[in-house]
Image (cartoon, rainbow, N blue to C red; front, side, top):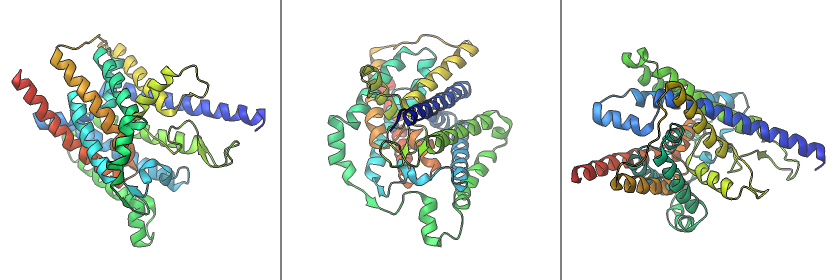
Length: 370
């Protein structure tokens, strides 16, 4: 590879990283302003019977799904190039990992994305959650828990041509319907459910839901189109620049927390480079910080008690282990994964919601005991 090719490759990689940082900075600002939170949405339903934030979350999924398959219909991205399309459906990893993550996000006062938002608004205990979660995520990616994961739950699964529902349905109907049509049906049902509520239509939450969904679409475009090389000048093979998986990626924050810690620890190693996942972590914190300053609600926050500390440490560990085992968090599987209409993502999401219910019960038991 000559110097000209290397310079062009470096420039394109920088463009991908800057685009990813810009998208997630805007996303962090919107999420902080809208109080977008998966755990909060579940909590609102349980404690107040309020479905507003859950409708916002579902609307974001519907928007992301329509956007992704819209991009695919123009040939700009290929959903089959994402990790969610794997024909090997590791159902036990998805459900169990999601379950552990769901418990953890309740005990730690929020999922991985919420942890980053809290850091941006001054939460020191979320910094601790970030460190512990990133550590346990890395141990589950490549350390002691990775060995256990690979030899146990990852051995359980079944094979399909693809885990993406539009492609599965397409195989049955002989591809008589375009993928966009097959994706539009479940997305349309989600849209109808969201806007069926007059209270939701009158609130600003539907705007936030669409913007958050579009952020996922934008990341699909950046990694799957802008950063895609049909022939890498070094390997002469297709490549997706600046991704940790080597595949098309959108938004996820559990494994990227581990990669962020790794980037800081091995900063001087020339082989240790920034990725979309790492800059997404920085972007979400930056966007939250700007929103907190604008709203004048930035404030330092620490642990209130030993019990509070213990719950957050346990929750962080469970999120790190569970998020990697399930191949994603509430964003990685709940928004990015579901936007591909992946069967694996749906199973992980079921596990997350089930785990969150158990987490609320456990948290209530501890509070009652105290």
